[in-house]
Image 1 (cartoon, rainbow, N blue to C red):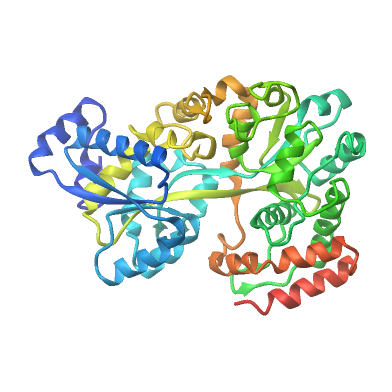
Image 2: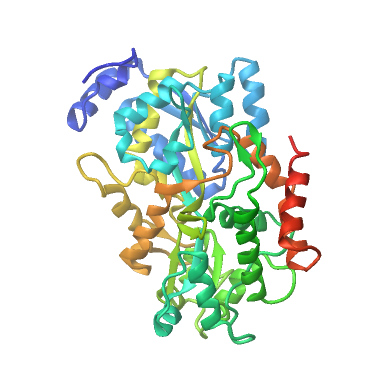
Length: 453
C-alpha cells in the first residue's frame, strides 16, 4: 500500500495482520478524546461499547465525552482558541466546511481515511456535502433522508404510481382525498415550527429551486417558484384545517386518515407498533405491524422544472481535529467506519442510514447488516423484518442524491440563516391563505430574503 502521509495506520493490513500489528503496538498505547452529540444514556452506552471494541483491537483507549448539540459550536471554537480540541468530533453537516476553513479540522486526515476506505464505497450525496477543493472536510458517518410516506395499499388498489413527483402526488390527491375519512395529504402549515422549514426546503429542492448561489443570496426563479407555491397550495388544500406540523401528520397517518405525509425516518419503528408512547391506532391493536405493511416511502422526489428530483438529508460526520493525536484518531475513525461500523449504526438504526453500503469486497455488507439491527423502544425488531427489501433500498438510496440548500455553493451558513428566519414559512403561508398571488409572493420572498446576511 502506498503511504501518502506519515500516518502509521495507513500501512496496516486487514484481518489477522491488523490485529497483530495493533497488539504489537499496544506497548505504546495512547488515549484520545471523542466528542459526541449522541448524549442520550442508551446511545452513549453504545458508543462506549464501540470505544471498548477499539481498545481491544488497537490497544488505544478512547474517552467518550458527551456534548449537547446546541453547545457544540461554541465549545469547539473555545477549545480551538485554547489549543485544547478533542481528537475526534462527531458533528452535524453545518460545521463541516466552516470548521475546515477555520483550521479546526484536519482535511488531509479526513481525505486519507475516505481514500483508504474507498471513496466509491460512500454515498455520493454524503461525500459531496463535505467536499472541498483539496479533499474532504470530514468523514461521513451516517444520515437520514426526509421521506414522503404513503399508503401503498391504497395506491395499488387505485392503480396509482408511487408519489415520486409533484404530478404523481396531485394525481393521488385527486383519487384518494375524501375527508374526513381520508385526507389526501397532511402538509406542514405551522409557521413557527422547524418542521415546516424542513418540508418546504424539500419541496423547493425537488423542483430545483434554491435561494442561494456561489456569491450568496440569489433571487428565486419566478416560474419554478410559482410551481412550488402552486404544488404546496394543492397539498395544503388536501389537508385538514388548522396549524399543522409533525404531530398531526403522524396522528392522522397512524389513524388511517391520511394517504400521504412527509416525515423523518424516526417514524419507522413507531409505525410498526414498537413504541407505546406513539402507537398506530388504525386497528385496535397498538402493537400491530399492519400499517407498516401497507406503507411505502419515497426519498427522492421531483418537480416539473427538475425531473431528477432531490432528497433532503441530514448527514453526520467524524472530524479529525487539528489538535489531534492524528494517527490514533484516524485509526479510531477507520475502525468506526469499517470493523465497528455496524456498532456505530446500532446507536439508532432508524435514523442512522449507512453512508457506506459496503466495502470493495462486499458492496452490500453494511446495508444488509444495518437492516438486521433492532429498532424500537418498548419492543425490538429489525427493519428487514418489518419492511420489504424494495423499501429498505429506497431508504438507503436516498443518501446517494442527498442535498441541502447552500452546500454545493459553499453557502450553507447563509442558507441556514434564510431557513431559520422563517421568512419563507410566513410568506408561503400567507400565499396559501390568499393574501397575495404567486407572482407577488415570489417578489416578496426575494425582497425579504435579500435583507438577510
